[in-house]
Amino acid sequence: MGKYIVAGNWKMNKLPSETYNYVKEVVEATKGSKCEVVCCTPFVCLAPAIEAAKGSHVKIGAENLHFEDKGAFTGEVSADMLRDMGVEYVIIGHSERRQYNNETDETVNLKTKKALEKGLIPIVCVGETLEQREAGITMDLIAIQIKKAFAGIPAADAKKVIIAYEPIWAIGTGKTATSDQAEEVCGGIRKVIAELYCEKCAPEFTIQYGGSMKPSNAAELMSKPDIDGGLIGGASLVAADFAAITKAVE
Ligand code: 13P
Image 1 (cartoon, protein in one colour):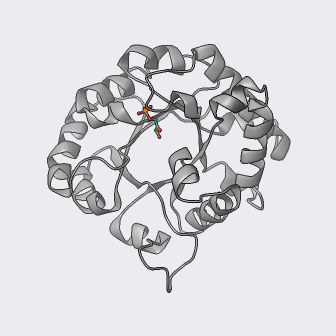
Image 2: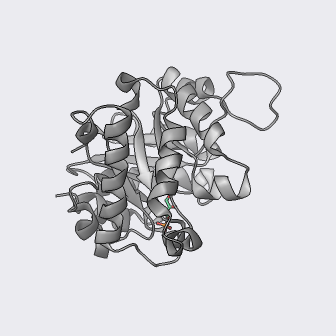
């Protein structure tokens, strides 16, 4: 299966002034982890995060980017700006951005292509609402999200994309998907990838689970064959908890 990656998504938390020390704490606490460790921070925290992670195993990511190269887009941040700072990862299409910031499958596709073009590793988020799950359309919906996100992306590039399955009803609610529910969808995503690209390369893709992942459930979730890591919200804000999740990969 894909390379294990545990990434924190800080969302709109932590101040720039707290970031340097906090990332230093994460670096210390996650030493020896058997997975790639990533902290995705607000734009204003990226500079101190990069400074603190310099020379360590911890990689830094952003939580969004714009799909245009440059120009009259007040308030936006481009892939080149992120790369210029030393950012390596970028979260794209998080459900909160789909809900509050008009992110669509189309903009997710444009942003994913731009990130790849500029050498950023995209973490593309997909997931269903509780209503969609109860209506029995989870996998149909996720298949559409995946197909649209990957439209026009050749196989060689596609493999660099990390997919994060985040059931919306499990985000910040304390309600984790059971490991079987999570595995069912992550396995389904791998089938869609096999269809889009090839049977043989599908196992090389990294598919994360996200949604109330914490030290107590991380090992069980990541023991599933199609779950190659986690995208961690709340628990990424406490270094010891985040580190415990990275250690759960073992
Ligand atoms: P929580 O871990 O807080 O549920 O958030 C998950 C998430 O949205 C990560 O992107």
